[in-house]
Length: 423
Image 1 (cartoon, rainbow, N blue to C red):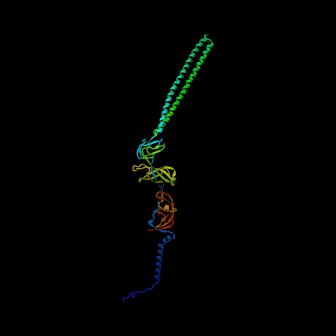
Image 2: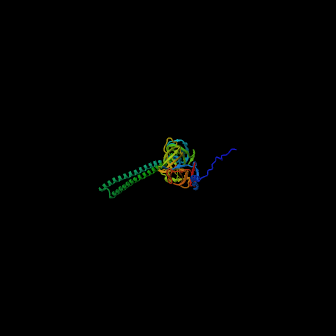
Image 3: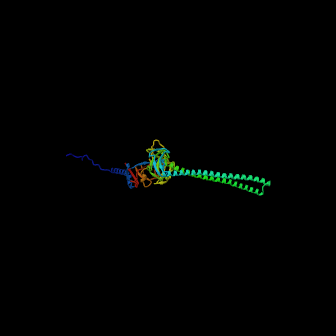
């Protein structure tokens, strides 16, 4: 049998000092445990929760220049795209197809209007009739004037004869060759001849005025009919529809050989030399709109800068339509109704506190954020927001430069006072 080690053991009696050190060590361990657990106890007491650091996004508050802008979308439209209409009812013949290039003044359609042709012929016939009547009236006036002049000449001859007879009777009466009664009769004849000549002369003057008035009336009738004929000729010429600008033909709005009434839209001609962008701005920003505002646009992946040149006075579908100039670019191939994304700049605020926009703006019921401390403990912090842009939002108060906040959605812990982020 093998002996144990009982003979080598020595019994040591415990002293009071060993117990004191044991209690002190236990107290130190308890303090350390309490220090480590205190944040968790405080977090539990305040209703906080633990969230993985990888499940949230954070951002830093910084100072910079904030450009207050909004992101909008729209479409390209030709600055000059007139629509052509039928000028007369009739059968339309379209001479240019959609996509064809046309020059200004080129015929693109014609309208056959038998009714207009008939009116034009009738007007021409009426003008010819009035011209013949005017010529006939001119001849009649010449004949009437000739008769009046003949009557005037006869009255003048009678007056001359009466004057000579009166001279003869005066001499004879002085020589007592004729009686006083005969001399008085010659006086009466002279007076009658003078009155007759006076009336004939006046009648000729009045007749000339009347004949001139009649001739002027006939000439005015001709001029009036000529105006009517010119108007019909203009309408006839307008049945040949020409391109008002150089460009390409857009869509046909009627079918070939349709019988169309007047003022019917036929087609559009798109001027490709200059485009504009039509964008819709939410009515919330209507008061901030103004002519000359800078607009940054992206068209076919290329960024260009234009400015507001027109603002619609009305609101449609909660939007204000705005026209923006599009600078000419040789590298861009623009098309009608092409999609455009744009950023409309309202103002620039220099040296302001701001933070990158995130989902926290829409998920938080109040103006508050979760600010992080060095121990990754996020606490609710009331803030006042200011101006906003597409990417950033101004911080008026509540945060300082360099602060870290949670920028992702708060929907999972919106009612939690504190959040502990853990790795």
